[in-house]
Length: 337
Image (cartoon, rainbow, N blue to C red; front, side, top):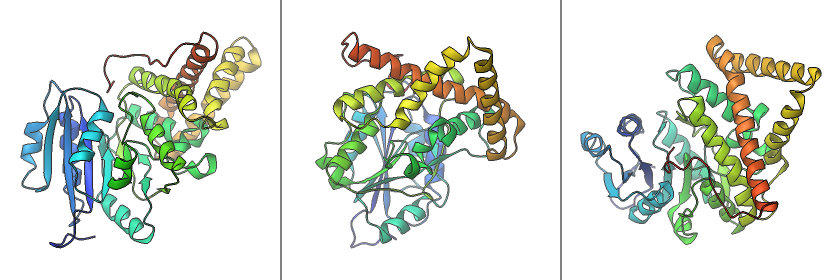
């Protein structure tokens, strides 16, 4: 939808950021290539020590409706909610700062909403050609149905009902505010909590396959493990808040983790894990443009994804149902690590 003087703002991009001006530069550059749509961009600086304001100022001539808001550090949920309150668009488009948009992103969103005016939506994430082999391997692990990663994007319908994720989430502003936005007390799983509340209230959601983003994710395996481990912990907390929301697909990494421990003590089990690594490698080789480095790194990323999520799930399950521990998270350095 092209801008006009009479119509209200159509889209508001909300982007929380913490100490990542280089990421903001890449994201804003990609936003300049979205065509003549009616949209504003709101950068919410969440108490950063390394400010993105100089980067934002450099793009004001290319993005006239660009706004910069600095707030005390309170986490991405609080920053998103602040941006939503300041926004004027009919739809909010919430992005992580480590994504880059392809030129056709907003066209894909607009064309879909013209035909199907849903309340909330999301799109898949993909690996750009300039990603490092580690980033591509992590992307493979997080999007492949072989690791249950398909629930993040294109394979969602076959595994569970699609729930938009905060790295690429759109929502009617009126609906977002009516739901109270993201739960500011949650550090992990807050986007799934938001999507579950959407569905429980009867709002419609959709996956827009063509509205994908290039998601850089974690740049090393240690940070990746921390991320997925806390995601596993969050699943138990989500079950407490939304009874019945845990499906078989969420149990699979935990079951795989238990089975892997047993397999290590059995020769046939060790052979099985080796064969599975080969399957991951071959599949990644074909999905990642026949890249040998990605194929070699993919099994490591896949096992980290499964064991990290599975161990977090089991840890939180034991804490909740055995020792009756309250909600907790691991690796608490800050909201963005």
